[in-house]
Image 1 (cartoon, rainbow, N blue to C red):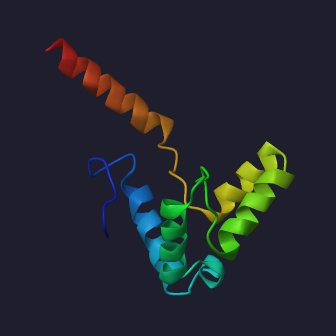
Image 2: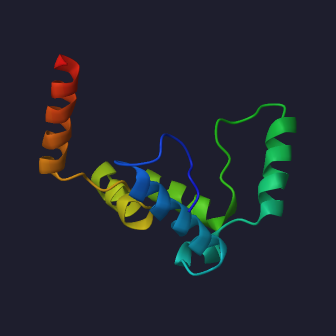
Length: 113
């Protein structure tokens, strides 16, 4: 699977894999979000509009998915909108505390050497 940014490996390796698979599923229509995603032509037209606008805005919503998400952002309280984002988009998984503790201890031992 592709890598987006950062060094390969924990803690974000699974997240990048999940995010790449999610993007592929959206693009290929296996994810409900794909039905509402903007086409590349619509995105290009919006970029051209933004680049040539006499008074450009900070954000341009493109397609029904973006318009719906921004409307939800305005209407929902923060905790509900955050829950929506967490359910719809991939998020990094928490690393088990015991694994973090072992890594921290190993790093401390290395620093002492």
